[in-house]
Image 1: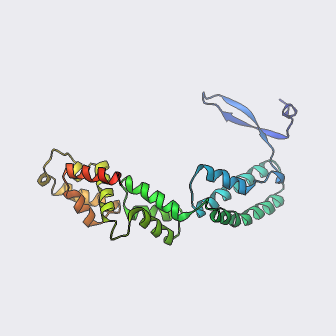
Image 2: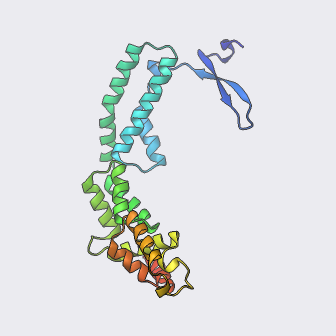
Image 3: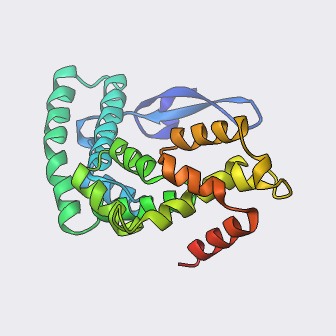
Amino acid sequence: MPHAQFGVEGRYGKERCADGRLLMRHVRAIGIKDAPDLRDVALRHLARFATTEKRLGEVLGRRIKRWAARAQSSGEEDEAIAAESARLHKSVPGIVSEMVRTGAVNDQSFSASRARALLRSGHSRRHAAAWLQSRGVMPQDVASGIEDAMGSAEDGGANELAAALIFARKKRLGPFTSHKIAADEREGGDSRRALAAFARAGFSHGTACQALAFSYEEAMDAILKFRHI
């Protein structure tokens, strides 16, 4: 099958359909003139996803890498690809800074939004902080975002306790082991295992003990009140 019928220079590659059949598809040749418009890439990504400064930079870096790989497979000279890749990488910090200036990227707002979601799904303050830091959020923005979402370390105790109760319900711990079992029957080994689970999830020993002391009805009331805040 000649390339001419497509009217575009390129090559063929195999593509597997949903039913398992292999088809030949035309892959358009990529050259220097096809280098990505990184500002447009950033805007299209931000239209779909909330992200951080670091993650946006990584997205743009991966886009450059994909373009370079396709240009190389299309026969473009390595020196030309390297020069254009260097130019593109050099432009990334400026594009990220522009997105920050316009408010399209805001690490503090991202932190508060994600921390709130994590808290309401049963994650601890410590877990939320670790998750945000893994996304490249600076420590000061992590602290500010978490405080905005949860309250200060002193005032946020009630929210942390509510998150611990949600965690307990998910893991069937403490009051959720079985709401028909009396509190004095949830002692000993089960209590130690529950405390260990809370510790692994980032909850303090004090918060874990408070959560385990709730009755089923008290725990459900606390969760419902928290979710209506």
